[in-house]
Image (cartoon, rainbow, N blue to C red; front, side, top):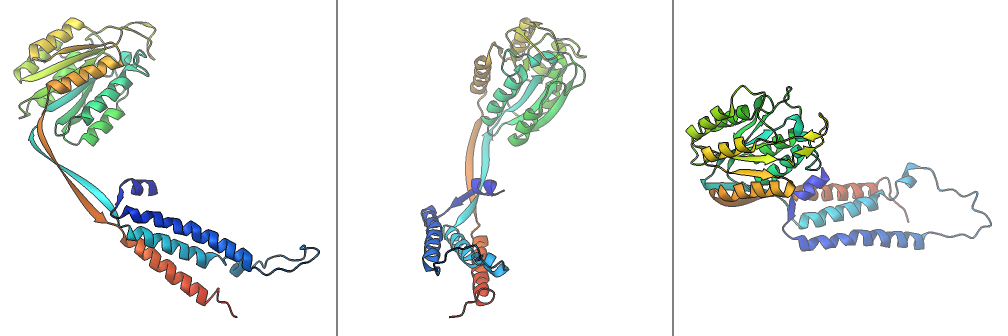
Amino acid sequence: MLYNWWQHTFFAYPWLLPLLLIVPYLVYWHWKSDASNSPRLLVSTTGYFRPPATLRWRWRKLPFALRCLAIAAMIIALARPQEKFVEEQFVGEGIDIILCFDISGSMTGNDFPPTRLAAAKDIATEFVESRGGDRIGVVIFSSQSFTLCPLTTDHHTVLSQINAIENGYLTEDGTAIGSGLATSVDRLKSSTAKSKVVILLTDGVDFGGVIPPDIAEKLAKAYGIKVYCVGIGTKMANTDTTQPGKFGFDDNLLKNISLQTGGLYFQANDREGLQKSYATISQLEKSKIETTTYSHYTESFLPFILIAIVCLLLEISLRLTVFKTFP
C-alpha cells in the first residue's frame, strides 16, 4: 500500500525532502546526550543493579519518538505531496482491430521460448500498448471460437484478457481457422470505423470447425475487413500434449485469406520475426489520432499535518503527565 502511494505521488517542493535527514541526526544527538548525562557510580559488581521493570521506564523514549515522527510528517507536508491523475482525450479517427489467437494444443510448442502462445501474448501486449485511441478486441479459437473481449478503447481490460489466455481455455482441441475468423468478422461487421482489421495468428492447418475458411474470408471481404494472417512456428517443436513431430500451418490458405481481403501474410519463424510482423502491421494501419493529455493534481499534505499535530499534542500530554520529571 505504501509502495503504491509512493508510485503515484509527486511533490511540489521536492527540494525540502532532504530536511528529513534532520530526524536521524536528532536520534544520534539524543542517544549521545542520553549516554553522557547518565549518572555513574563505580562499584565492584553490577549484578545487583537492574533497570526498573515499570511501564514508565520501558516507554521512556516514546515522547522523543513522537517528536521525531511529528518533525518528519511536517517536513513531508511542507514538500506538498500530490496525487497525479492523467486524462487523455483522443481526437481523430481510430482503427477497429480484432486480435484473433489460435490456442490449440500445438501452440504449446517450445520453439518460441517458453511457448508459442506465451510469445504471441507478449508481442500482442506490446502491440496493444502502442495503439492509443484504437478500439481493440480479442477472439480465441481451437475447434470452436469465443469472443474473449469485445471492441473497446479500455486497453487495460484488453491486456488483462490477453494475459489470461491459456491453452485449454476452450475444451475441445482443433484449429478452426474459419470459425475464428467468422467470429472476428461478427465483432467488426457493425463497426463504423473506416478501417477494420483482423490479425489472425495460427500455427496449424484448419480442422475441427463448423465454418469453412473460404466462407469466413468472403464475409470479411463483404464487410470491408482486412485480414492480416500470421503463421507462427518453425514447424518442428515439442508440445505438452503431443509427441515431437512436424506442425505446419497452411501457407496457401493464409496467403489467400490475406490477399482476398486486402491484408498481408506473414511467416514468423522466431520471436524476432513475430515482432517484425506486428510492427509492420502497426506501420501499415496508422491511426489519425491526436492525443491531448490533461494532468490533475490532488493535494494530499493534510494527513501529514494531522499526524504532526496529533504526535506533538500526545508528546506534550505525556511529558506533563506520565513522564513528568521533578527537579
